[in-house]
Amino acid sequence: MNWTEQRKRKARRRIARRGAILLLLVLAAVSLIGLALGSEQAVSARALVERPPETIWRVLLDLDGMPLWRSDLRAVERLPDQDGRPAWRETGAAGTRIMQVAASVAPSRLVLRRAESGGWPLRTVELAPAGRGTLVTVSERMRVGNPLRRVYYRLLPPRGVVTRFLRDLEQRLATSRREVVSNPGR
Image 1 (cartoon, rainbow, N blue to C red):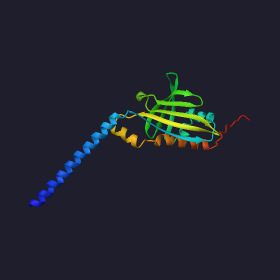
Image 2: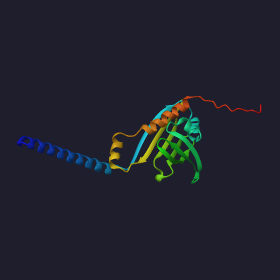
Image 3: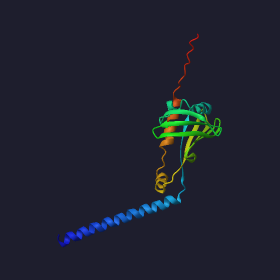
Image 4: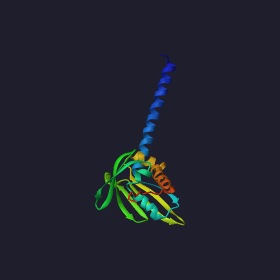
C-alpha cells in the first residue's frame, strides 16, 4: 500500500469518526431538549357534524355498537363497573386494553381513560351545539417517557388516532340507518 492510499484511508476514518461523534452530539442534544419538555403530550382534532349532541352522545356510549363503526376495534366486551364507572375491554389492531369512563357531562363532555397503566392515555370528546349541527372536538392526552419521542411528537404530533376516531364517527352518523325489530307475534 503506498503513501497516498494510506492517507486517503486515514482521511476516511477521520471523517467517519467525526460523523459518528456529530451524530452522538445531536442525539444527546435532542435528548436533553426532550427531557426539558413535559412528559404529557396532547393532540386534538375537531369536526362539524350535522346531528344534535344527544344523537352523537348515544352513539358514543353504545358499547355494543362500537366495533360496527370504529375502524380500530374488532370487539368490545362489557366488564363490571370499576369504581362505579362503566368499563369495557377493547380488542383491536393495537392489542387489548381495558377502558372506562373517567367523567361525563351528558351530552357535552365525555372523558375516557385506560383503566390500567396509570389511566393514560385520556381521550376527551366535547360536543358543542353549532347552528344545525354539533362541533365535535376529540383530544387525547398521553404520557411519553422517551425523550427522543417527546421531541418527535412535538414536531410531528400523532394526530392519526383522533382524526381516525372523528372520521369513523362522522361516517357512522352520516348513515341514516334504522334498526328494524321484527315482531313474530303479529
